[in-house]
Length: 182
Image (cartoon, rainbow, N blue to C red; front, side, top):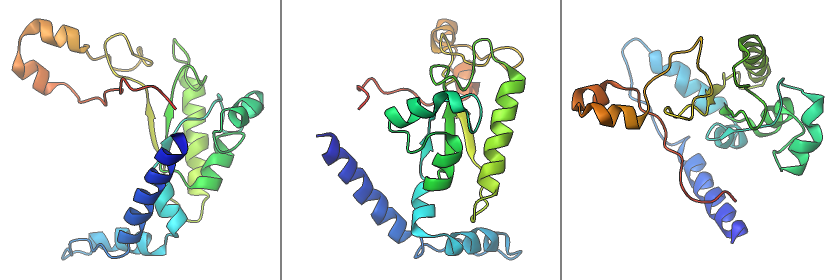
């Protein structure tokens, strides 16, 4: 069952990747889209597919030796962030506290060093595309970053206000699926 889902997902990604070179960006008078068009045309198929993925890897640093075996045992695609970025050209990473990327409370210097180190690795790649860096920050009881970050109210608090305007003004967060992990 797991292999069928993987094969299906890879097939869809291949179709999308084959469409990318055909897609044309809207022309603009000032040539702003030329950069994007040139970047896409210069990318390999593997780089285009990799940009579709945001992954998690265990560790506090880009090459954390304490988590090499954990990453290999959990099929992360490499022994650390650096190997995963270099091997798969991923578009982004997501930090979790259970992968020890971000602590509770947050150590801002550690997270800053990790983020900057990951961006340095991404920019050293052939395609030179910065990573999309995110964290598991759904609001309510799931808040990895509190102080010095901005803490938004959770959905229960917003619902208690019975104000559609306040709910509409809040940032939108991705909602975790209730389906089991594979």
